[in-house]
Length: 233
Image (cartoon, rainbow, N blue to C red; front, side, top):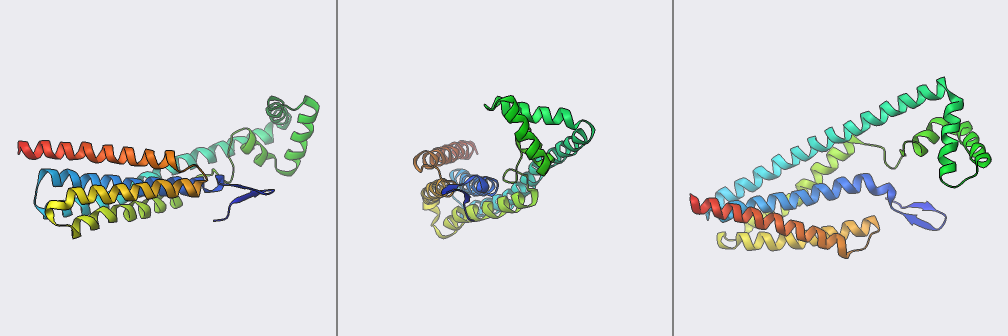
């Protein structure tokens, strides 16, 4: 996807919707499936239950991500539509108040009152609703909720992320599953953190470190729980 162009500048805000869903889905796929495999592997030396748990985690997680993302983003979309409808009514019923309200926003940003009123008049003459949605409510084409896109992206990226530790568990001998899955998952998490930072135009170190640390913590805690209940059993 091309960058948003402003003069000679390249910005990345137009990527924020799908990038958030993609990173969240892939990260959850890797961490939750790897943690599940490591936890079950710590409790049982039998490879069968480990693979079954990993597969179940992949399917359940993908469906959960799709449903959860769709529902949450749909709620955001409902709120946006309600605000838009309310703003339409206010513009129709009290345009002068809305004009001065918009001008007041520009005054707060540093314009003098006369110039702010002129700006408000010109923007409202072209697209009154768009001006109020953008400057009063902070909504734009780049932040508009897209539930279906978010749900499908989360499900697809979760499945892609979860498939890697599951495949590692499938091909590795039983005695090497835990170490192998942890190693592969951490490498993949590091790549994911660096890639998401690159696509989003951010620095590489902090996002990569953040993803690695929380992934390692999740797997360590789950392994500890699995070891504890395995020993009790």
